[in-house]
Length: 473
Image 1 (cartoon, one colour):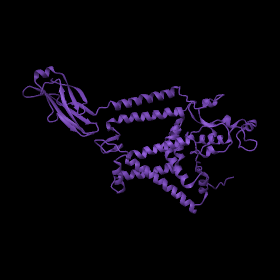
Image 2 (cartoon, one colour):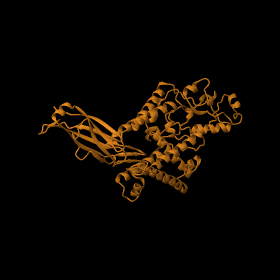
Image 3 (cartoon, rainbow, N blue to C red):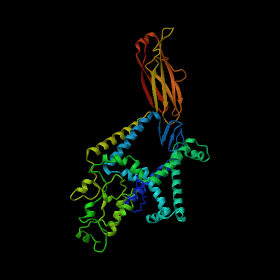
Image 4 (cartoon, helix red, strand yellow):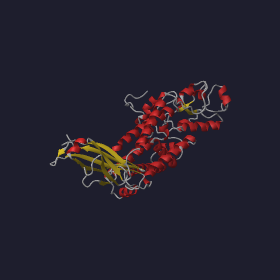
């Protein structure tokens, strides 16, 4: 009986999760994605890419120049709708994948998963396998071995966190120059603040909070159940096969072969607990599907390894759907249930918006223009009786290089268009120029002419034609 003088504990003490390493195809796939993701993230700022106007860097967010350099594509703020389409595509892809294969994104592609995996690998490298790490946890801090190994582990975590944060900052400038400025104290204050904040948050998320990010902070784990249906693939434990009628039981004399186990009503699960030990979020998949599960498949590798050693059929834990598991004779292999309205709707949205984004990028003009008539006054009658209208032409160069443009008028008599000295105008990449134009016509022609066209030609041969009105009354 508890002491009434002792205040009750409002929160259960956190039990650290110490995952065991495992070998298998899902672990290999996770490692491949991790290496590929790290190569892309840490390598892109250093990938050279020659361009006429801009730093020779493949990907750079040029905030002072108000543009984003993505290989040969230059994105300007006025093309923000591309970002909206891209965000829609990302959401549709996430929903589409979730409806098909559950939380596969969490298990393999999420930044939290990738960095936590790397931190666990560092921990394993310095402190050893799971039993060694558990033993080290129980030792007092006065232990020299604990201080050395844990201190080195956290120092390497901090180094990886700092490298992650610094790499993020390098996307916002020319990496070699920004790196030199950063370590010589000449970088902007925002660079140091960003690196400090990201270093601390990366260290906390991947080194301290770990599974708590997936369980309590990330909203995806909570609302993903709305996208599940009985046909969604997820990691499942085949309870009928594993439990039998008498439940699971360890393998021992008289209960080693399948025949012996089945004769006594026991299932194939030998209750080794390895599936729990390898789980990065510390769940027991044998208790059924849980929102904490990130569908990483490591428990599948662990169980298959045990089944192989015991000489039992593999697949006691596997990717499967509730529909297939509930069938009298479950079908072997992955059963993708894609023929439903939800999956087809997500897929159609994904294809449609991806096509729209590609079309919009492919058909983008190398320059933007707008022509507005000056309406105060709408027209002016000059002393010789001729009538003048004025127009304002705005040109923005989006070509990625310095460009020269010529402006003409179609449907006007010679000499009627006056552009001052701006018949040809040179504009730097990403910059805009406003040109004042006037059209003067004698009274007879002014009354007959209602419309004409402005023709703008770039140095690359691209042509834009805009219709304009001429007012005489």
